[in-house]
Amino acid sequence: MKIFNRFCSIILIFTIAVFIISLSQNMIFRSEMVYSFYFNDSRAVDGIYTSLSSNEMAGEIAGFMNSWNPEKFEVLEFTGYDHESVFTEEEGQNMMAVKRALDISAIVCVVSLILTVSIYAHFIRDGKKKVLSDMFKISMVMTLLMAGAEMLVMATNQGRDRIFKYVGITPMGEESQLLELLGVDFLNMAAIFLIMMTVIVTAVAIYVNYLVTKPPRLFY
Image (cartoon, rainbow, N blue to C red):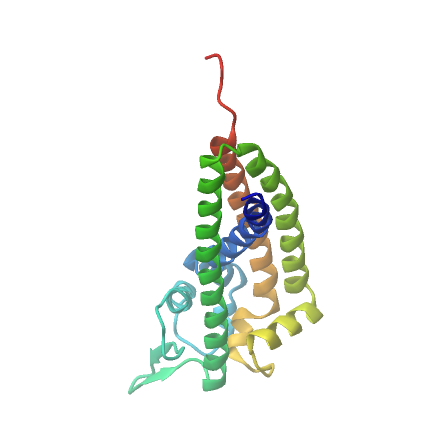
């Protein structure tokens, strides 16, 4: 039993950190508000060939990110005689790659949450709240390191190139409309939002952990 508890305590360090990071990612990159804010602030939609407004484009992209098992990515607009896609097939494939990566992140988020809750329940039944408190503190350090690495990837050309290659995003030319919308400037802004969301989620996690692991009060 001691070996099992030791194993669970080590796993907990990682599941808490992974949950916080993956939840923050999904909350940012699935949020219509984030895309709408960037498009309205940068006027990026005005720089591509489309009649869609910034809010309409934000809704289309967020809708795709939140869709279930889409066959392809396309944003259609009426040209006067037919509906045509704003983006090319290559751009659509790149967005599908991003969508798959985000969906994997969502699965990891759910799995890490289930494991975290299960381990918490196990240790609470055994009366080992102190172990949970200690492991949570270590996990906060792990969360900080993971968040720092995430920001480094998003903020540097080398980091972005590596993650694009890993996700399966093919290089796009400077004339790419998708690159105009969701290029380096968008990623820099998204990184700031991601930091803020990670801080918020971490604060909530700290509060929940305190409620769950605080020792019983002798006097009221």
